[in-house]
Image (cartoon, rainbow, N blue to C red; front, side, top):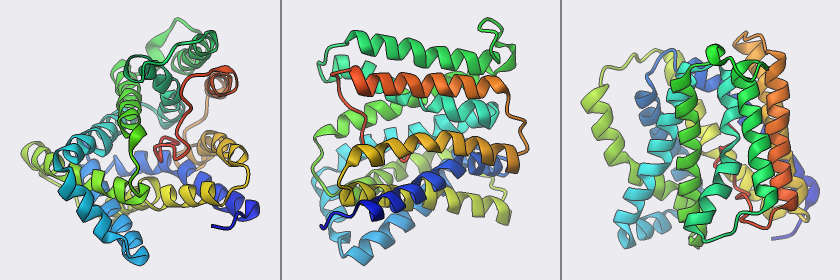
Length: 307
């Protein structure tokens, strides 16, 4: 593939902008669906999206081969992402203001470093410890609105859901570290692998749907632009890039852009502490990337991880 930094930057900026909108899409969609229903419908729309992309690329057979070769592996992987990760993420968003949930979700990058110690047998360096302190100080600033001791301005259960979702995502990525399959085919196999668990739990515990068109539009938007197309745009941006570091750093625009959409569309007045806390979280991640020698964050970013 011919390298083209301008094209790579353009694709990355489109992806970053789309990811910046998904926190708003989560909150709007959760007014029509429960977290479990939103996981189910968004996963279906993502499967349609990724299947269409692979059909255009003539790679659909790859997904069939992956599922036939390792069915239990993809059932397990799909139970982590998308099922558990998005269920916890949506549950957190349902209980927290978007301006709190969105930046706190960014701490997955530090959680990944923590999990790399027991699972990948990596050392924890001083830079990692400093980065963690800075990141989680940012979380405290956001949740306490700058007081550092008063947690009455946040929902503890919602906070726990978001933080646990970062553990789930990090574990999912660590399991995928040695995966050599086509990344889009691999992602689709995970989503298909999640269907049995998602269908059983949804129709056992939350089968009554409110099928308003606004909610359906939200699930399509999340499935296509949080889980599907944006991931592909980011992947191609990295492939075309001459300097991947410059492309990867663009992702740090997303949370700040997201606050703009949250303020203008959701009409959430953004507290000054959110900007301060988010700056601390981003600073912690940059410290970890610049000075640590442990595992680097995945360039493909959990889609969302930007969410």
